[in-house]
Amino acid sequence: MSARTSDISRSGYYVDTLNPIPRGSRVKLRFTHHQEEFEAIGLVVYVSQSLGMGIQFTEVSHDQQARLNLWLEAPPREF
Image (cartoon, rainbow, N blue to C red):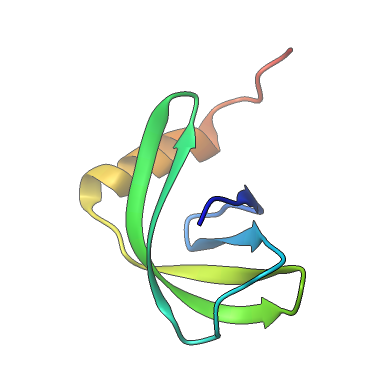
């Protein structure tokens, strides 16, 4: 599934999608930010029908967590 993500934090994120998968589903996720990738395992913790779903990170390697921390701590880019 390819979808827009939002509200990313160290513990999870939100996926905007018209067809969310069921609550309780485990997912392997990968998303890209400025040509770098983040990969982890997550759990769908809530679903908003026809809007999206909240996913909690459940398995994140040390390297991937460090990458995510850098992304979250970086100042916003100007366009």
